[in-house]
Amino acid sequence: MAVYSEKLEKARKYEVENSADIFNTEKPSFHITPPVGWINDPNGFSCYKGEYHLFYQYHPYSTHWGPMHWGHVKSKDLITWEQLPCALAPDEEYDGQGCFSGTAIQDGDRHVLIYTSVVDKEQQDGTHLIRQTQSIAVGDGENYEKLICNPVIKADCLPEGSSPVDFRDPKIWKEGDRFYAVVGSFAGDGSGQLALFSADSVDDWRFEKILDASRNEYGKMWECPDFFELDGRQVLIVSPQFMESRDLEIHGGNNVLYFVGDYDREKMEFHRGEGFQVDYGLDFYAPETTEGPDGRRIMIGWLQSWDNYLTPEQQKWSGMMTIPRELSVQDGKLIQRPVRELENYYGKSVQERSVHVSGGSFVPGRDAKKYAGDAAEGAGQMAMEIAGVRGRQFDMTVEVESGSYERFEIDVACGNGHKTMIYYEPEASVLTFDRTYSGHNRDTLCSRSAYVKPQNGKIKLRVVMDRMALEIFANDGEQALTSLVYTENDADRIVFSSKKEAVFTVQFYELVKK
Ligand code: FRU
Image (cartoon, rainbow, N blue to C red; front, side, top):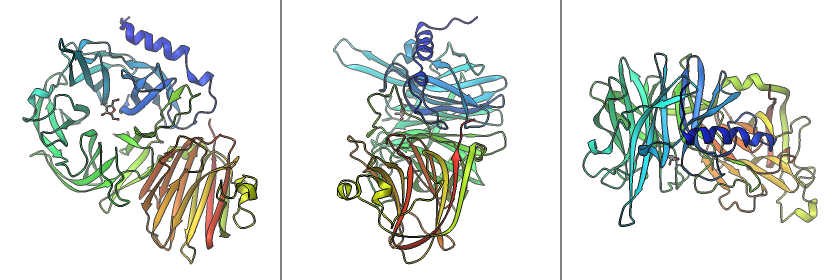
């Protein structure tokens, strides 16, 4: 039997003995969460021997970021995930400061992981020498061994001025017999670039060229690149740090952008179009994609943000992943829908057609006295609830007919004086997610908006909620808004209201764990 490092054994033992599942029955059921501790980026999303595998950035020992391990789960249907033992620990001289993000591929019988190995050595003068390189681990779907020749890619082959410190998050793929990898890097101009490498075997890489670059137009360092063909086009996804806001189209800070373009494989040249935001919510970062056995391109993202994460003190875990999403390209835009497998978890359903609603809902705080602090009572006779449409684990589609209404609002997680608002204002064509009144008293960044245009005389909102995870898809996946909502789980009412009369249809499915 293979011998594992002390660090890996320790992590594996710790996660079994401290699994947060036994302490916490309040976790989402359909979103991947850690057994214990902190997680960020999805890693190594891949199909291996007919099952989906997902790894993630993982610090089992606290609910904050720390020396990165790779946690591991697998699934047959992308919705029910089986916990596997921690796959990588920062246990080598070249990765002692962390096994940062990376990706995976099946190669024959082997499952090949490529990740960023980080060292941070204190020098005699007290300064730190930090280096990021790329390393390989090979395994059987449960146990992985790092190559003796690691690291296999170093920054010294990059163009002059490129940083040896910010050089990370390799995405691996294969074309014919040849491997390719694209790695995020910090260029001499102080913004992101993507370095393209190729290899005949995964221990011997060659620098090809700089595939694309921010040129200070799209944020600074480009993290977690992904590059794939879809519907006859080539798609690049990157997670730029420190974006500046542009109207509602791009929000500031860490963001995720996609570029649809064309790729000349021979010349290895990518001609990209304009950059668009992948998700307009508060909590979405560092997504990865993989191709399913049936040819679907599937994306999964980290459902949390770096700058404004609100993990409650008593929680023994922090961070989760989105529901995996099927991607397609239509008219040069990326379309995202929750994977169809979610439908296998539908329970009780309610359908209501041509519902008329008018009248505003309450404002907690201001109207608290008048309405005894309860959303449904507060909403009075004007706002409405629909029998059976209630809960914190559901998949609900609401279609609002174009008309003279000024604002249509769906409040979810309502109760105990709290609510989370999703509202559409047709004059401005703006959809807003707002958790101002969700009851979290450290939440300072509470709302985000996106432009949503009516389609065939209506707007269509699909709301997938799984306790504190909320994913909104507008117009069959043209826009997504993903955010966390830390309202107590018994706040489970759903209230509809509008300014001036609106007419809508609801299709509601409870989500039930098998
Ligand atoms: C993105 C990121 C990656 C890095 C990892 C470290 O969220 O900063 O660039 O590999 O997280 O945990």
